[in-house]
Length: 233
Length: 233
Image 1 (cartoon, rainbow over the protein chains, first blue to last red):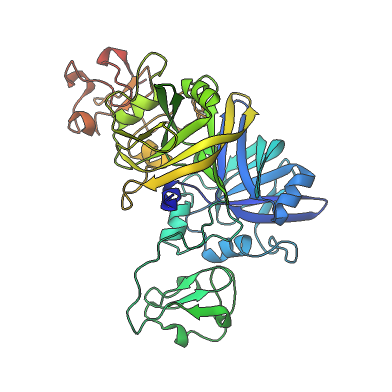
Image 2: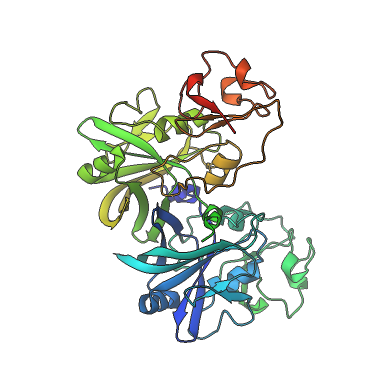
């Protein structure tokens, strides 16, 4: 099996929110698709280890907020690499409430779909939830949605180990950097700091060596400190 | 419900083949995603009316061939708008055989994944099949996969009525054309001939009115003749 074939499958990037009784959570997912059009239903695959899985299981409702292409990696890191059991990921994020009561993330999103679970399929590490659509709307009809390919290629993003599409070491590494410009990898989320690119989110100009980053600089994806980074070999 | 939200979901475009005992079929699908990575599984949603559904149900195997961005609309039309019950869609198409015996479409494809059905979920008009991956490989590691957005935006493609994402009249119409340059719609597949764009596949230059198209010209998506076209109002 040459698993690089999997990287040719195309996906979007979404914030999946769920919960009830005043306790809500959100996570990033790329595995969302429409299943039927009459009535409109959609499927989402969620790792059983994720807190969102627990929320969907108990409240039977979820919202898919469709990320905009321009969404910063910090937002994806917040929802994708932190655990909602210890941390309120929705704190400070722009939301609205629709027909389900589950928060709809409006910040950096182009549209949303609210659904109630009508079926589920046990798929081993993940559950595939089938949701009947209760409501949906565009937030910015003109804006482009973020694709998984764009996130990886342009944004330099990674997938957490609990993602359906995570493949340890399978994704081909980019060519080794020149001698002076060592790249550093975040040991928490896998983000690569490339001194040739810098970090636009953190206002770090291209050409800045890792060693020269300010002490308070943190990983633009998961927020880990400089001490969590290791030099790439 | 503002169903334009659904158009912000991102997809690829795939040929799904299945069958056995020397009788095989293929169809276009956009609803494929990886569900788990260990073991690798993927989900595909297929309309119950489609002949491919019958094939998967009986042989329990399918292949996902991932279309390349440059795949011509004629190829998508062949697999997406014709019925395999009356027509051998694979006749003359470059294929190879892998571990399942189901034809892998190699023509205009960047990679493929072979799978056996391990579960299925009845979703009304569609069945969601969960396949355990038996084999996969890249056919062209450098080439870009076709996305559903690219197919619609750049190629001017449409979805058949049996697609999960088909929405009659929901997709916003492009602005009306200038008086002289009337556009014509294919009554079979919905393809719009836009004289301002022409038809690169049929070597029709931009600026060619529909009336001036050669008599043998046919729909680049489904192959229907000029007589199957109606002027857009």
